Amino acid sequence: MIEVGDLKKGMYILWNNDIYRVIDVNKHFMGRGSGLIRTKLKSVTTGYTIEQSFNSGEKVQEADLSLRKAQFLYRENNIYYFMTLDDYETHSLEEEVIGDAKWYLVENMEVDLQFYNDKLLGILLPTSVVLEVKETDPGFKGDTVSGGSKPAILETGLKINVPLFIEIGDKVKVDTRTGEYIERA
Image (cartoon, rainbow, N blue to C red; front, side, top):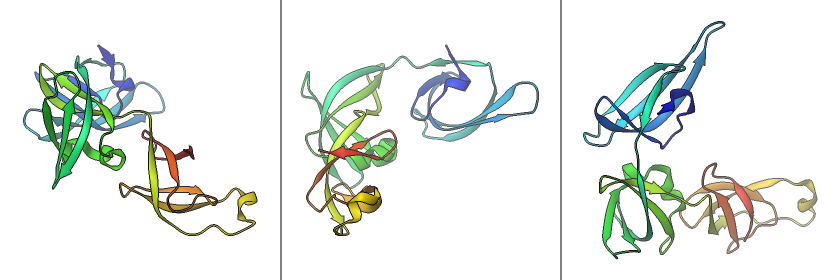
């Protein structure tokens, strides 16, 4: 059991005899008394999205997921294909299920696939990935001291802010949880 105040985006819970993925969590606290946790949940079986409010202190059952190492193979239209490394079986997920993780997926990258009773639910990314800068403004001499940043577009289409000394073709390490630049790779 997990307290609803500890829910985070991407978690899976068992609620009302169904598995739900937490899409959004908002915490509202009144002046005195307990708070209200408003969640947006998506059913894994039906695909329907519901909004559910919980009182703080309530508990829900976290879905017991198993993780399997896999390699991202390729994307075709809105379908992403993965191969598990233990049995070389191919699995596919729709872009809607992948969500924002699509901005960090490059071919041959290793990820963890999340399963519940042998049903594929989603993916778990590493905390950081290395991506190549495809488009950015040139840095100007003398700008590096100011510690400023400039926008850059990475190989997956992700737009982030990078330091001024980063140029096209450089590889940068990006935090997959926040989408922020960490360092040059």
